[in-house]
Amino acid sequence: MKLDTQGSRVSEAAFARSELRLSAYLEHLRNVARTKTYAYNESSINLPTDTKLFDLALQTAKKFKNRHLKFIIVVGIGGSNLGTKAVYDATFGAYDVMHPERLPKMLFADTCDPRLLRSLEDVLKTITHPDEIVINLVSKSGGTTESVVNAEILLATLARRITHPEQRLVITTDVDSKLWKLAEEKGMEHLPIPDLVGGRFSVMSPVGIFPLALAGIDVKALMKGAQTMRERCLSTTHENPALTSATVIFAHLHGHPKNINDTFFFHPELESLGKWYRQLMGESLGKPKTRSKKEVKIVPTPTVSIGSTDLHSMGQLYLGGPNDKVTTFVSSKKTAHVNVPKKRMLSGLVENVDGKDAAEVMNAILHGVIAAYRKQHVPFMQLELDDLSPASLGAFLQFKMIEMMMLGELLDVNAFDQPQVELYKIETKKLLV
Ligand code: PA5
Image (cartoon, rainbow, N blue to C red; front, side, top):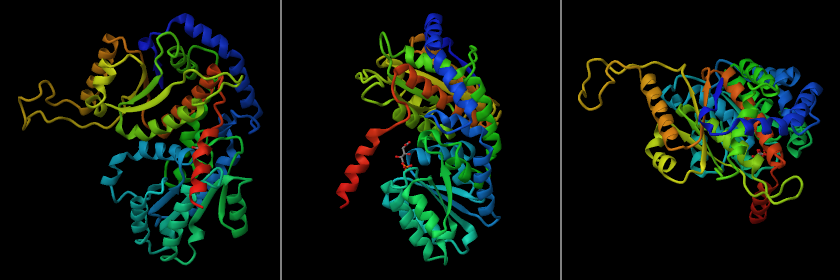
């Protein structure tokens, strides 16, 4: 993974200042890593090296995996499903629907949308044997309305197809939640989430590892990628991408502030990864007060764009609208290869593409956009992933989680809580009385 900040318009002095401001925090992160415990807010950085927890998730996946498995339904919302969906979609893409023969398929029940639930019920009605299905209910608190309602509906439907639907249910939750106790009482399979690991930092815990392993994704490589990246992001060198990226985002919140943080993925299959990052930034930094109780004046608002699709909808705003955004272009050279025919049926419409690889066309578009951003003085960074393998995805996830911890530190906000998310949950419960 390479991060290029030449287009960021941030001075060497700003990088030096940020390095200085973060030096004690970096030492703290290194200390958290040395303890190998879950005693700190930042302890999610210890997940990629926690072989015990990893093996537990992997062994559970092995127990449920078999050659008849057709569907894994992940019931969870926010931090409880976004990381899993990010890795699954990045691996199999939106075009997974074009490969109906590739099984098992992972399906997601997040919100309580009746049409989504009706479709999932239709899927469950095709089940003829318990081995064909696993439902993974993921909820850190164990009491999120959407997740509990969805699980109840799906389990009731499954009960009409198989005798013991609860035996095809795996629960992932906090050890002290009511859901954990219920799973214990009823003898249902259950996996823990370490207490201080919040939903948006939990993808390397059983939250992500169990369903991804069950879906056949190389979770060992995912963890290895995260481990290697963790070492890079805890180092003091200029090669620390988390520190570099956090500095660029933070620096642009001052002077003529650029508080929109756009991650522009040049791979449509990374859209869910963008949504995972959107939650990571939104929930970590969207706080009313600093840790020293001062009013928070400005934080970045994350947006996700897909190249080249969104150039045809948002390009005008990005290049012609207010200069209030910092963009990170994310791409990878290693992708599939498909060529435009040399002898074309639609010749004379677009020049200079005869025989060209579609990847070369995409690359020209990416570099065309970058040139236009430069001309318009719109600041950007370029992130080149080695490829879209599990190792690269693990590296990206870990890089961004540490970047967010550093941004929390620079902005002096608690990056690990989400008190205002609870507000809607409480109001919803009142309305359902
Ligand atoms: O990251 C978070 O903490 C939230 O997005 C939660 O994951 C989300 O609200 C779902 O909560 P729970 O995992 O407790 O069901």
